[in-house]
Amino acid sequence: MRIFVINLPHRADKRAEMLAQGEKYRLPLEILEAVNGNAIPDDELKKIAHDYPTCCMTKGVIGCSLSHLKIYKKVVDENLPIALILEDDAILHKDLAEVLCQIESIDRNEHPAVYLLSSHYYKTRPIRRLNGKYTLHEFKDGSQGHGYVVNRKAAESLYANLLPVKWEADKWYYFQQMKLASVYCVVPRVIDVNGVPEVSDLHAERALQNKQRRKYLNTLRHVVGIKQQVKKLMWKIFARPFSKKS
Image (cartoon, rainbow, N blue to C red; front, top):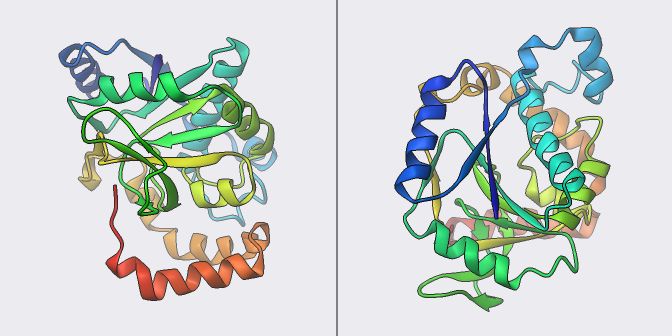
């Protein structure tokens, strides 16, 4: 399985940390240059991002979404059956290679599929047992893009439907509701993230617009049916406080 790491050229420190993890776990990481949203002129952003700047997506977040789309295109162009996508603040677990082998062995590219390897809410009943202590579950909710596997059909679907940029790269709930891909969670997770705000290239800029962005997202909820919106709201109120995350 090809493994791609999204990294901005000026963050040599994060690149070195990722390569060190790859060497430690004998994983052949390929560094791909991230799209620097802050370097894109505003007139270009208006063409690339839906309803910019009213959409309240920061330039960094737009660049992040474009970086993931860049890898989807690479998967399609090179006809790769499956690939692992990592952001450069991912923390890899020692069992990652074993889990990747299991996913690669079960995925047949029969339908668009994304396998989340970091922390998300999931449906309790497993749909498949992987080797050892790991199981595969249907995704319930959550938004992290630090580490996930995408098959070619999913890469095709996501790339074809997510331009111009309207969503953050990790809006898995919406992508699943839009039927762009089936989303699954590996339990327990095999990738963590360095959650220190100072490490993130997006945190400070994004924090200033989070409230406005959440309001804007409400205008995009038409992609989810009313019945499903009510169902999720009830789940958030009554079930999520007691739900487990991968």
